Length: 260
Image (tube, rainbow, N blue to C red; front, side, top):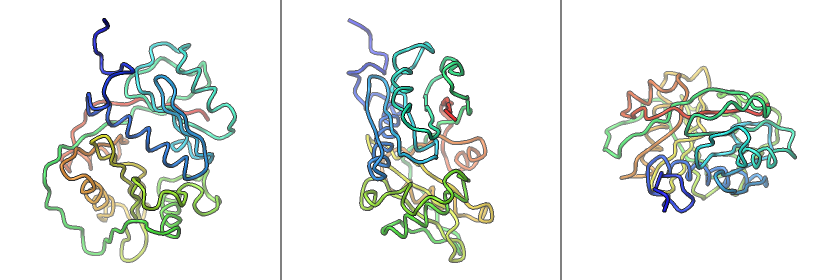
């Protein structure tokens, strides 16, 4: 009998917060791909989503167990899944990986996985910042515009409205919010509650609105989507200090690969 290591096919999703987050992220990819009429699949050790647009962070393979060799079957499955598309894609791993450059992947970096315990807060949004959830196609299109300009995502400029955020997302488990500063849409932040964790995902802020309270307001609004649940995200080193000020703990660094 093999010992439990946290990543066996029969390991309960609730075995660890990290495992919960990875399955949450995997389902998130499914939701966005379905809404955009893209593709998604589950194979042993990996969840795959291809939205069909040139935004690498939406076309993603989420590893559900460590990959120990660059010639392993999981990586072959990833390459085969993304082969039909001509747009970029990413691999997200919660662990260090072998060097994948021989397979045509480029190392992007090691974003930090941060986690906040479900403790109460007393935050009140700054005057001039208003946060609202997207409830219409027009709201989703506005969120797309802010994301493209704020992240930025120049490869998505010029796409038709709702190419990234399809109509099927409305009323679903993925909540997309827009923060306006002095009445002008300035930032977006999304959340996905599943498997007992709040996944803070798909966020961007326009350069002119940074350090004006929009980003922080969106973080607190999304935390409140899961009262009593931990909130988690993987973040750049630029955003990490903001998360730490809000009570998040740095847990581990992920590994992110890009197929140009």
